[in-house]
Image (cartoon, rainbow, N blue to C red; front, side, top):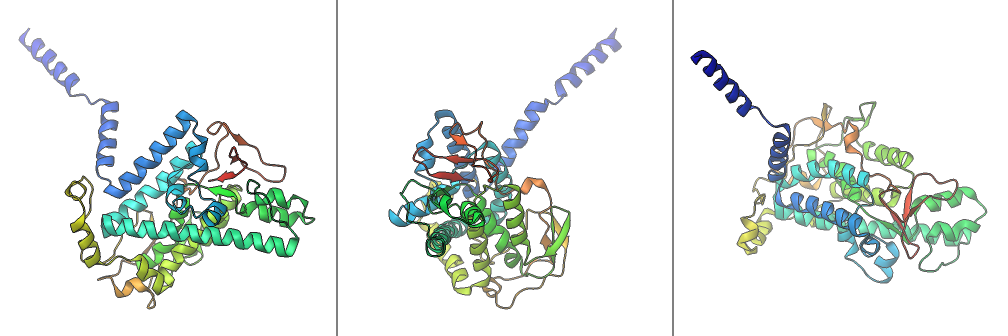
Length: 372
């Protein structure tokens, strides 16, 4: 009887000690979220909150007034769109894939360089990508006007609608893919492309090869361009100019010393900024003080051995205390998708494109088009 009681007690003990899968999952999520640096965590929470609020309330105007419109940026100097557009997403898959790609990258950089320096770099890159995006859009429109006779169009009309009368269908589809100065872009994919293009320089070299989804290898210098083409082919209505502008800014960070210097906040400056911050920010969970040993980063992406050598003309090689090991990111895996076309189910006001397009895009109430 006593033995039986002991056995029952043991059984009760085992039952009490059994883990609850839901509780374990929740604990892991809390640990993951608690381990995020402050700015990375803030961007993640803001993106999710904005998306949820937009879906629950149907606030289409929120997207209309925050997405990146080259026309609004130039004609009305709505510079805030450079900062707000990356925080807005057009569908569930859009935000999920962008968060899967952005959070590990941002976490790695912020943990390495500090919250203040990462915040400054992020702001500079957002402004730069917006300027490049708008410049390319207006350049494309100017070329269309001069070479194809596309007339100036009303404020609410996308470029490809105005170009419908152009005789050359090839020109029509090129203009449509670019989106025009009234197309509205949203999402973090431009900033993700900044990181992808800049990361080889950040790691200390642009030689060697990278794996594309584990299918084939390309030279490191080709890698961002291959991704740009592949994603545009897979998602025809993704923001080509958004991705391209991010890629160009990322390359400029590494290859243009002046821009790299402007985008780089020195340790001394970041320390002075940190000293002026309210104590509740400096003491906040996840705040990372600026290290004094320069820039270094452990890539969150899978790595493959490659022949990497530092570039003697790179601006950061003169600022860092050491270079990284001879590995370069492979970017293998579908979890790194940069953007996703919005779903009609997620966006009640989405409509299908005209014949010859492909994918789904969102047309806002005033006629502007939102692109992921």
